[in-house]
Length: 115
Image (cartoon, rainbow, N blue to C red; front, side):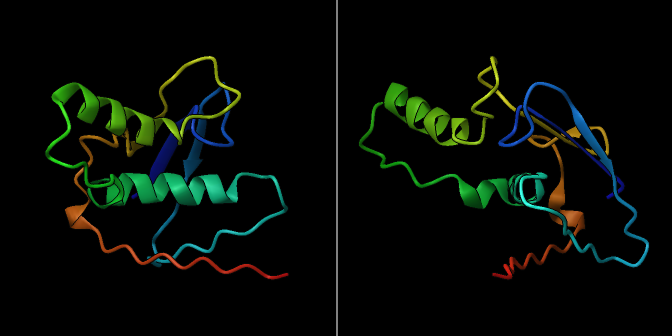
């Protein structure tokens, strides 16, 4: 992975945020001041790499319309509250997260907070 582009996702409001990530050593340490978007970037990586595991199981007895609405409600929680749009975008190396093949990667994410 070399690049991630994020739009209308959590803390990333109206404009695209694009990050060049050099993973030559295969590790990434993400740190910075409060309110700079670390958690949003962490969540974007989680969505891109673990999307199939994130969406909650929707009971089979729901109607097709209810199933679509429940899935939309879940994914809309990631849309920036400041956005005028109701969808977010995440692209990994120029590929939309919905089509991104994460099977070529091993992802281990740790979340540690110093108080």
